[in-house]
Image 1 (cartoon, helix red, strand yellow):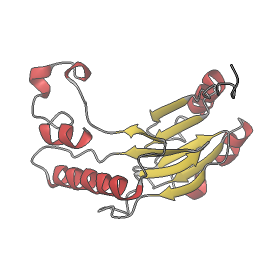
Image 2: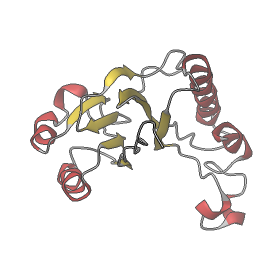
Image 3: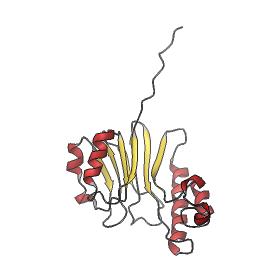
Image 4: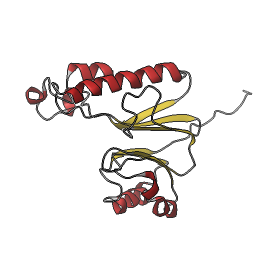
Length: 188
């Protein structure tokens, strides 16, 4: 039998974590990097502006950080062993571009989108309407810009419980924020 030998797929380890403040949890982040040695760590809710993000400490651990930060709220980051290419902060059509909620980059030929989805507060709050509009805009961007023949990983904190097994009490969560039919429809 001739021909080329089979190419073994490369295993890539990716971790996603709503860190809820990179500065408060920096030691834990460094511990995760040391213990698990991921190729990519995607953080949400970094809660820090780009100029004071702890790049040096992460570089000492062998990781390069690309960040899209915001003071006090939001913020997303990609921590990678290799420098991501084609980094994009936010996305075209974002209805709330002042909020740092999406960062994307290409690593090893795979497009990675790290998202921190709008919370929404309550089903009857204007923030929930914004959450749905934001999810619609994100989907519009993905459909317009992403070539479905190319590899894509989308991850992050979606602020949506996708399945009954993801909530502790189905009756309690029925038709509430994070578990509503409108959120499930957009996540699907």
